[in-house]
Length: 240
Image (tube, rainbow, N blue to C red):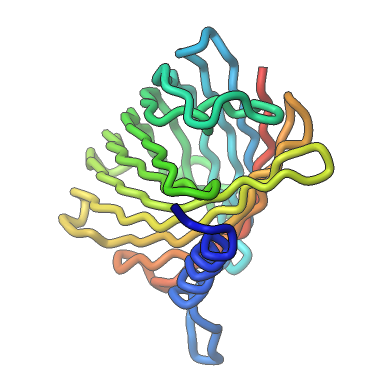
């Protein structure tokens, strides 16, 4: 069992590792940057089922391109609670050891006002997520995801695996959950494991119905030029 100082060091070490992967910007270091605004809604159907809907808009800070995505999913939660009752219990999945998701999303990338020749994508999504407490409030996160995609130029499947760590803190009558995550992606379009994403952020429960999640992500992608991307995002979450 980890002691409190040890858990803080572990979380801090993960944050430092994430920053090390991103690395400092150099004068000759070509990278793109983008800002993401996202709205998510979680509609509880029962103790084990909920509907998840999402809509996001991504604006490139280095090019005149805009990306959007809209999706709807069904979440299936396990019966096993990890910590008993939570302070606000907004995101019930945060307190379950296993849960799955299935659904559909569509989106596209458009350059300027030209909405007819942009890149379009539709995908069926299947994913399985697990949460494993390792002591002193630290939780290891895992997610395996399969995207069956229909692209502008044909079909391609994408396989994604993500691992992370988080810890919940209580302050001012709410919960703050800082986290660090790393994800690798294999795409049959390129027949390669071409993308890695390193992300850090904090989940903030404002009320029982609303929360926000500011985050920063760094992406390496050998299939794009530049291969390095900085992403700054803010997610607004609604629970019912």
